[in-house]
Amino acid sequence: MKRTENPLGSICIVGGGTAGWMAASLLSNILHGSNTKITLIESADIATIGVGEATVPSFMAFLKDARLDTKEFMQATAGSIKLGIRFENWYQQNHHFLHPFGKIGRAIDGHEFYQIWLKTLADGNTTRWVDHSPSGIMSEENRFITEMQLAKTPLASYGYAVHLDAAYAARHMREITLARGVQRIESTVESVQTDERKFIQSVQLANGQTIESDFFIDCTGFKGLLISETLKVGYDDWSNYLPCNRAVAVQTENAGDPLAYTIASARAAGWSWKIPLQHRTGNGYVFASDYCSDDEAINTLMSVIKGDLINEPRIIPFVSGMREKIWYKNCLALGLASGFIEPLESTAIHLVYRTLVHFIRNFPDKHFASFLEQQFNCDIARDYMEIRDFVILHYCTTQRGDTAFWRWCQTMEIPESLREKINQFRHRGQLQHHPENLFGADSWYSILEGMNIRPETYHPLVDALDSQKLGQSLKQGANAIRATVMKLPSHGEFLRQHCPAKQS
Ligand code: FAD
Image 1: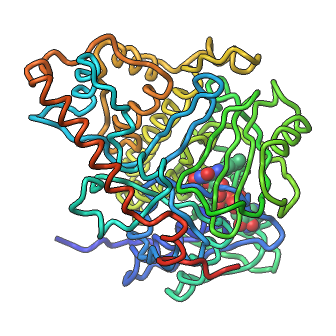
Image 2: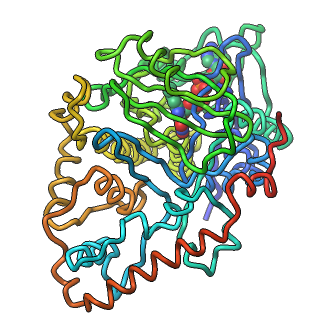
Image 3: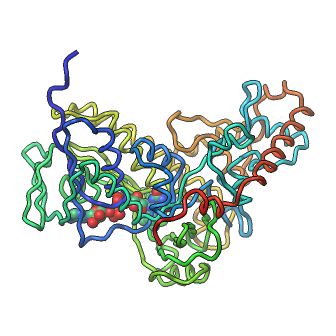
């Protein structure tokens, strides 16, 4: 076997937000020992977006892959635990449900737990779907402990992610990657030079430097300086499915210990978030400008937040969608430059990680074989569309008719892929999944159950199981989860003991 003859000699990351520093962290670990030089350019004059503080469980895998110590990361980012999302007022006003992380229930004799649970409901069982979720009950009780201590308990299948301070996270990853040899240049890219093949050759900086590189990663945020402004790669706009296109964000002082979950409360023309960190709370209202002005949105947010304001409310416009090609020629778009699905399920940082995972799998050499780019673009598009459909599910299943926005949602157009999935589910609760999907069947069941949608019947083979025994077993299982959760420390105690914030 011969060695690769033309490995990439250099990668230039443009942009030092969450995406830029995640790329530097992961690549500096993966490329450790190679001769590929990594440079990151960030501008002191162009601010990062400053939001994006809730993650999903894959973020824990990112930390591992990037060789970032979880405890140190939590301390450096004043992080808190996220066991799921509590959805308030989505199905109807004054109704709430949880989308917990981790696995829910346990298969019996090869039968999926959801099917078993449906059968027991038909036989008079009254346990809730969430009663079988370790993360769900830990959320309800706001308790937590690390995985090592839970391995052999009824909570073993729990899952969690973190809430983080985005500015602290970028700073922490910067410190670590600089120590690993990543070169950082603080300057603004003023122009981008391409060759006759439309490959990027170099970027010209305000400080007079010209940076040449074999490969470029565009982490410049929504504008996509390289992928869009230079290479003219178009954007698939999904506003017809996801009409929220603005957010107002503000930070407040904490009022009490942080909760171990994100709150997403449906409002007149969108929804508001509450993300608790150790040192403050992030709040925001994501809304559709066709149904709500900026002033109305600010007033709505101000009327629901608690705690003293730390900064002034800020409006952030966005368009849900994705680049037609996220990898084009010798440029990879990452983070907001690559696309954005509104933040209801906190998936943007996950998509940064997935983009990097697919890129590493298809890592090019200087020949830039086109099938690598094609395979990559196909894989990442599947990830985007799966998440798009999952987020739309929360809107199109609402029963709220109290405002024009929610009435629109009830009759909205939905993608064929989602329509098929819902139809399949309605029949007898079965869902088809790609094994690499972010949201597994349990997540879909949690939202469907939360939105009060159940299938007409359950899988016929589940009837082979003994109803009485099943009912007892489910009740015992749910009791064991709650009893074990009640022995855990509170989330606040856990943070204070295990990973108190290093920043103030
Ligand atoms: P940015 O943060 O915008 O960084 C861009 C960088 O590029 C900056 O460093 C800037 O200085 C640099 N730059 C720009 N132009 C130049 C230039 N010419 N020369 C040099 N440097 C340049 N994600 C989640 O996972 N969870 C959430 O809960 C979540 N909530 C969100 C809520 C809202 C309302 C929005 C809009 C987004 C949210 N996101 C969330 C997404 C998340 O904020 C982003 O995915 C993440 O912050 C990555 O941003 P970025 O690094 O791509 O861009």
